[in-house]
Length: 369
Image (cartoon, rainbow, N blue to C red; front, side):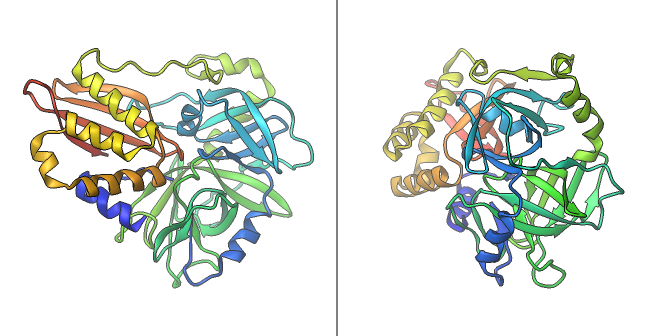
């Protein structure tokens, strides 16, 4: 991650919105692996993110993860067994620019047997409480960043630093002030839970939504993590579990996987270029990215990087993010198109494409916000 972040800073202006378990550098990985296996109610949605079982056939994840898996014949792994996803419910959104609240329910194709579900947290205020994170995303430590991409389940502990009406906030402390197995979520863990244990019972207190860079950047000591506050939505979630017909109520988006059409791109050269940019990432071939650059980037942009540097950035981006898929497309003005993209590991990124006014049209810049 260290190399790719440097390259991103060279190529883009970055405000990363990612979700990996980032651990203490002075604790053995084996302890985090052991902790992760203590929570079988946490599942993995392919490479896209996590989900938590809250009913025999219903799991909770992040809305942006649910949006990312709609056309992928999605499955959830729980207890070593794969379960299909019959339908998904995206909670009513209060913003057109981001998922807020970043929350969704998944109805599985059958009931999960032999795994105790997590209860919804409705107890006293969360601030100051000791909690656990569990996920199977990319991992590393707060000193070096992301270094492990083995897909194994890990757990970590943390303290709820602050609470708002709808969100929980955590940060990654170094040895001083840290918990024994301090950790925080990272890439591939969107939708994974904040868990609280009491009297042998497991409670779902939060759902991983987005990260906040710290003084040393993302996935390093001092970075932060924001989770949806489940307590604020517990009542409506319980109602939705009891009354399935409410999945069709106004404001909610009930989605059957594979039924969604991709958002429409502008029907002009700008849309063609954005569509080609997405296709090039799906090809997973650096030579395709170079062909795209030679055809669509301005001469000034091409002069700033060598083909080898462009190839290195592209290859590392595939490791860190995977392929990308448009979720929302918004025309800012004649020269700028803003596109929210879901990545293969479940991160939600906003790409701002800026075009030259010359003919033929060229891609002047791409920034990630």
